[in-house]
Length: 187
Image (tube, rainbow, N blue to C red; front, side, top):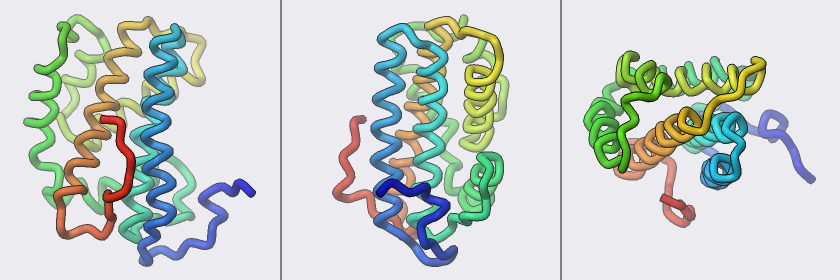
């Protein structure tokens, strides 16, 4: 039987590693689907899946550490809980350096892309980049626009960078309960 995570018996304050693994695996698969959509010429779908890969890893972190509130039934509240629990305590202070080094690794210049320029204008923080991806996802899902493939690719790279960074940060942290061992990652 398939059940939404909001209906699983879950208590805030109690880490749930099994549910975290489900969301970690969903995040991995969703990012892979985003690349497939991009490759096959569906930029809006790629953009939407890119955002959801990041969102699902956020839920995994919250659930795995006992910080997920099943009553936070909006993306804004879930992202807010993530930022409150992890973004404001210095845990992501090296993100700007990680982000810039990953951008430099790209094999083409992304600076001409309007979405990249918008993201770079934002404060380079995990929270601000998640919020920007969310806004683009909403535009791609709900507005009568079709993103061009270059925009979808650029935003897909940002989602890839965010998921890599969040995974790396929590994997090396000894202060958090989530265990990344046994999780199959595609990066």
